[in-house]
Length: 507
Image 1 (cartoon, one colour):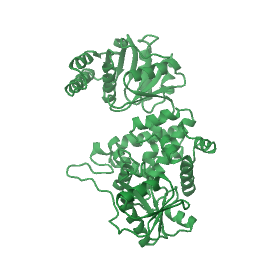
Image 2: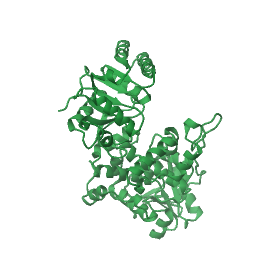
Image 3: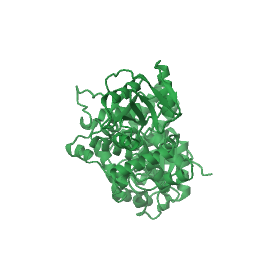
Image 4: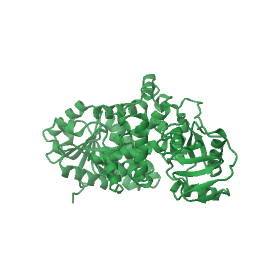
């Protein structure tokens, strides 16, 4: 079993910005002497002062003893030049995202450090294989991708380039674990795990916005209150910065030879062109200037409680709906499954979206008064549901359907009749991209779920979520989206198809 680097080993960090300083703090906390180098005069010393102030705050909060905080601070040293790093056992680069600059730095390091020294890049988007191509010994280079802020975020992607030795990747994996992080192995492909698999979270929301499905506040609320995501996609893009988020999307799209699955959004291009970069510029999808208030999500006004409520079948959505109606003392009856109907009330038939529009579903099922509800992470706990109404549905039936959901304690947001609504299509595409990453050998199923939970705080790993939904449902949603749009963007991953035919789940 590969061992972590000894705490006696010197760790060097190059780049004293937010990421470099955070990585230095993590390594010093773990017990290593850390040498911090930056080409800006005084930047390393300033960063060390900031890290020591963080140690003092942690001690004041009781998260570190005073002695441990002082000892960790004492292990930090400012280096003045690359030659000062000769005794390092590990060098972590956290400088500008530029291939040529990184190659130049690592070539310089090769002439200084020992042959046993491991070289690591914190890059989030540049190929480890490409960086290593300029080195005499690319086998000792790997990616060690921390997430910001490094002291708080648990995930570390250990990225192997084409030449990276297995022992090097395994040593970094063990070292990251010893530092209190949760590492995952990944192959050096565009976006690695997180930045690749996360693309649909932004892309599907932008697509729904482009089609006039709902406003940003409503879509964000549905993703939070039904999907269980910590932040809605538009809030998250505003926080990341549209220049950064759009650049990553473009980078992944180009690296995959313009695969339509990663196609950038014209809406976000406009935001960047306008300088509406999000919080840092004072305006993005939301206004962050002084005095501005965040818009509220659209919610359907209170509707009358319908008569003759029937809940059908044993699905998770049906069980949760029945329990919620009982909790709110609403009278209803239960019946055996009736096709894919979830409930009927006041002439309306409610179904969980399967990737079709409500209008198409009404046509296919010969049920004009069709209302679709969106996916929820947990229908028992969700506080809001998105719905869409078929064009054929009469208003009284639509109001009855919404009154039923409100009686069960849901806030209801009516979206335009967009295929797959917002949470369902997003989760299906996240699962699809995660499956493709596994299918292409980027990582295994456990790693992709761990990475998405810890790297971007998703409420559930996308493959675990697909298992819970059932692969037939995921496959059906993707097939209907592909049929509607006629785009290769929604092609079903071969791994989902294989697991479906074999009647297996991801594990």
